[in-house]
Length: 394
Image (cartoon, rainbow, N blue to C red):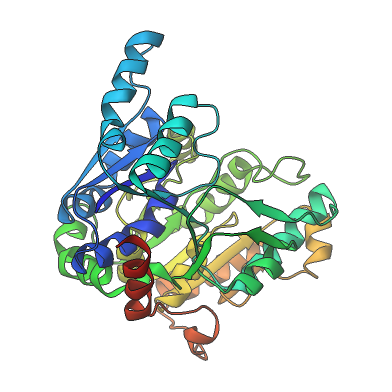
């Protein structure tokens, strides 16, 4: 069956691509096209060589809509990109609800394929992190914007919906009731699916050796402004400057590997590095897990689900926090990354200096009490997933 994947940004592609690997191996899909709705996301993905090569590995093609400024040329171009919908049954994955909103062409094309070719639409609502993080992020959000009245989440027009957790757990994390007539498929933690992890492990040394040397530590970036509208706390830029001044002392001892978020203003970040006079670093767009696996530790100073990825993969995690005081009270002085941070440093630069010295110069290892990750997040049952899709698409 022909397959088209719509995605708005790279983090959604991270979640869906491992599933595509499994469906391809099971011969449930053939021709695959990955379409992003914006030119900037297309070029951002192009920088991530691992994701691009992953798309190639499954015989896929990457493209984008709205290439031209001229309205009529642009419409013709979009029709050409979407042409398979008019003559084939298509299995469509939408990595975000409402991706067709604002585009009558996409909306009508998807409906046409469903009605006349019996095409199938699948919405991905995967959240590749433990449900306890959902609760923490929910408390964080509520402390800033207030507690809104619970509203039922109604999803229409899809043939199936993908969840990481069970629908009941999803409702708890969302604090709302789900209403849909679509088939529910629980896919679990997609980023550990066998075919994808095999691809990553097989190619890891080739990719990493091109740009990263060890020892190194991994520093995922976020926005340089506030993380959430309405926050009353230091900006991302202010926290970055403070933390970089601490790690600058170790520029001769360890390489810093920065990984921009798709919302990171890289030009502004480069200005910050120049201001601090930071050296011995690389800005990498490699797949984060590859960088995590070779890093001495992972450090963040803004909320990031990559903290969970690092923790899951056995990498020491360090967070410097300076939350909005309302968030700090709601979380009772604890991290928003519940259960995933080895060293949580709350507004204490002296402690950050001590932890940096301990991990970099003294080579101290974390004595972590490991828990079964299967207890934190559902693992994928590939056989069951394939059976669900086989019944669904054939």
